[in-house]
Image (cartoon, rainbow, N blue to C red):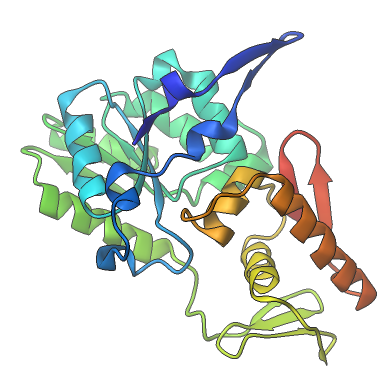
Amino acid sequence: MLDARRACSRKKSGEKLVYSARYMRTRSRSASNSKNPASAGFLRMGAPKILVIGSDNDLGRKAIYALEAEYFDVRSMGKTFEEKDLLEEIMRTNPPALVVEGSGQFSRVVPTLKGQNSSKKAGRTRSFLPLIVVSSSLSSTESAAALDAGADDVISGVFEATEFVSRVKALLRRVAPDNASEVIEYKNIALDPRRHLAFVDGRPMKLALTEFRLLQFFMTHPDFVYGREHLLDVVWGQDRYLDERTVNTYISRLGRKLKGMSADAQFMSVRGVGYQFL
């Protein structure tokens, strides 16, 4: 578990405050101590990264401990109204798989997470981000307000770790991609994950395992921009010791293969952010 407030380095670049993406690198304590965590097996590419907001209160800490016990890759931060710029940067460059809001500030958190105050494209991207609100004292009216604001689930009352983790897993399953055995198609490219086959206009394309997984990720998440740190986590997994140049190398190599096959989609570099597949 890593507190983003303490771990993110900040530096001035003109008038722009830049946050280091390194906060996403550290694995959770429990996950790093496990060689083969069976509980994390339901996710295909590495342990799910979960951001817990409210690490400075008892409820947030309980949520963190419960998730770490199940081998999730847990990141945390304090009160978002004090760190809104940091949260915006996290959502833009390296979004988690799910967010747990435990700071009691869901009315301020939801617009940032769901992109309601951002561009149309960013809003479309973030609208799919799963969000669970946990509280010890929400009324039925407040719970309904949280759901109406965009929360996917609300847990109120005495915190039960088993129920909480089960709800997290259930929500992750609901938003997971379709069965990996189905053929994935984007423009004139097709992938068959079950047989590990790739085609451009019906012609087979040879891909190494990591190239295949990288292309599979972008084909199931087209148009959106993803940071290099995020790609390292979801494609290479948390048990790796690589730097961001690895992503550049694989993107370039895969891009050359796609261009050589006259694919209609190509990787685009967004300076200072990452890559998108268009």
